Length: 298
Ligand SMILES: [Zn+2]
Image 1 (spheres, rainbow, N blue to C red):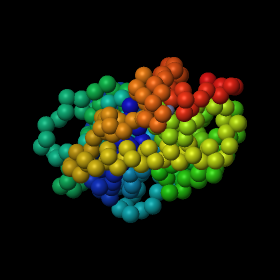
Image 2 (image 1 turned 90 degrees about the vertical axis):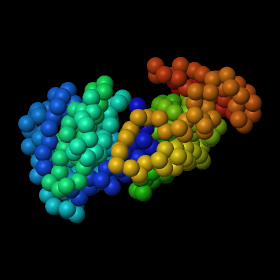
Image 3 (image 1 turned 180 degrees about the horizontal axis):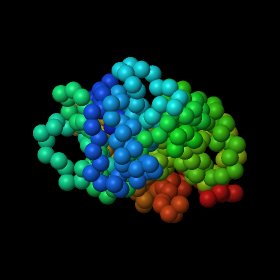
Image 4 (image 1 turned 180 degrees about the vertical axis):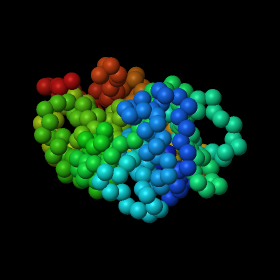
């Protein structure tokens, strides 16, 4: 599943290659890939045809293209946006017309210029595209309706660290659950949460209401650093005419301190990293640097 840094790489690619261009035709090759567009394929293609891609936007792990009526026209409330759900295997590819179709090509978008076309390719079809109005979102900005409840992520210039810390401390839950809850702060997945908790020396089951402001700032600051580092490494290979998401940014193999490191010595104290079951997945932590709180909230 692509995380924030991978989605940001795709966003930048779309920004460079499709923003400002007018859509000519939209072809849906597999209905499953637009199943989230309730009004169906004809409505979907009709909404897109003739529109200009005004901006490529992201919040947390969510990616969308704003549709404008003219180049450089700002998005207005009610304007459409195409929300891209990348799912497990979704890719947005920018390709010349004569490149052979991918085996799992699901949606093709052509433009009214001589430039390359945009293809949505998705082997497992968990992802898809859908068009929605832009509505005022939690924390400000205009977002596609289905994701308007998603909070700003730490990479967002308008992200407020103080507000996010206050939001977490108002919760009555475990710290990691709060970090993963996209309505307080978005874009922190399982891997980034474990890494941020290790850096901040906090246990994943720490009750949020016992967190000090300084601890809240520390763990969110660490999350931001980890995402930044992943983006710096995962984003550098992209400059070709190929916008790709496959969830693997190479960063994870080299730089992880906690996630996936069960039984390996903690890089800070040498104690073997511990794996606990967590929400059908795992949490990795150092038993010594991140002692379990007496009143854990799992
Ligand atoms: Zn340790």
